[in-house]
Image (cartoon, rainbow, N blue to C red; front, side, top):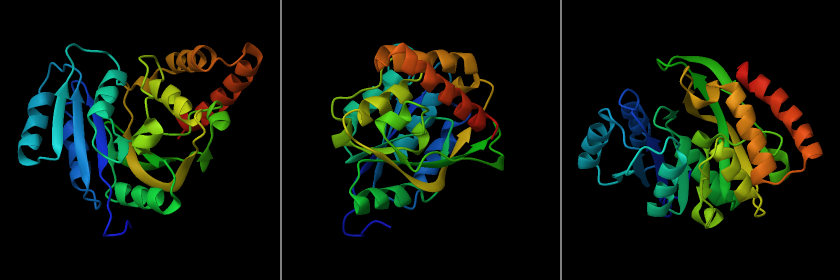
Length: 255
């Protein structure tokens, strides 16, 4: 655990759009963290359901929960996450989607790792759950260490498990493109940083038919756009990366 005399603030950024069914469970998973020095920034992407009212009720009871709203639906978590980064106060920033869940010691384990190892970006294993939150030991394990070159083969940094220092983010922001998180991590690691896996399950990923990751062809197109147009990988090398991405993606999908 983190030294009791120094527990750095963690800013938890939650983009939300029409998430009234799941947002309570997501926020509760932060409220239930054994690590206590956090703030939650929910950025509502112009929801048309009861999401905002639900979050406001939580914010009224807890001054560490703040809500922001976009002027119009952006259709992507990129803009909401960027708004969160701009308004975050913490030394560290963590990302959590409005239908996913953290396990109780998630922040404690990862902040302790960050502080002890003096690194800037950590992530972890996660477990898939169905739309009703049922667990079936479908654990997704990724690389122990991710570098820029290794990440080009496949996104081994699950966004819902990540915590990154404000210093490492700097001026980097999410781009409004498919696979925006993949591109974000590449842009971070391209600056010379490495990402480290604590190799424990710290989060639950809700898998539904509406999940963006459920459309595999869109994922392939998004991946190709990132490595070719955003990272400027040449055609021949890009094809090699695409083969690796496909194989690793199939393995992950079968979990």
